[in-house]
Image (cartoon, rainbow, N blue to C red; front, side):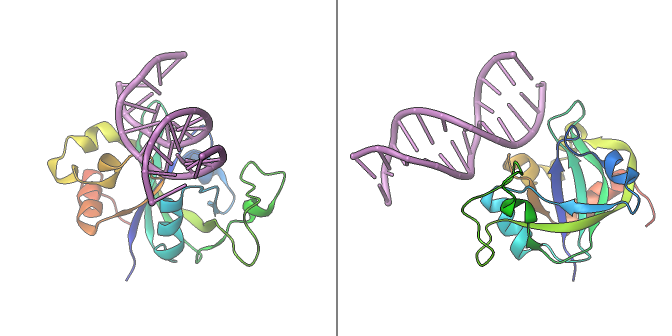
Amino acid sequence: MSSYWLFKSEPGEFSIDELASLPDKATRWDGIRNFQARNFLRDGVRRDDLVFFYHSSCKTPGIAGIVRVISAPYPDPSQFNPDSPYFDPKSTADNPRWFSVDICLVRRFESVITAKSLKKLPELNNMRLFTQGRLSIQPVSSQHWHRIMAFNPGDF
DNA sequence: GCCAACGTTGGC
DNA sequence: GCCAACGTTGGC
């Protein structure tokens, strides 16, 4: 039984277009340094789960497309790299603090489903996206997922 | 660039 | 374990 998620990224850092331009359209989702997001990623996210790719802190914040989780969660290598901005001296190989997963592109929406338009739907008022800011990995209920997909129907 | 919201840190 | 100070997120 797979689950639905929403991952946030600032397109200035990493956008869905960059993902689409990669040879295999796949990458590691790393750099998560928030405990609640980490817990969702480590304890909840599983291979084959589907994820809304959300663009935040940009001109048109919203859901830019869908990606699929293609690995189990595993320790984020950047936490061990002193040269990485994500280095964490408190992490050890035996007790890593941070996790990552690999993801691949499923589809890019023709246009971003804006946060503004999502906000207009009463059924989506209680999405974490709106009730809890600053959470870069969050679960999406099946109801919310399908309501949002009805926004932009497609076949995949 | 502003600033509200809120997570994290560290002194006590 | 409290809480003030500080840092970050993220919409506008």
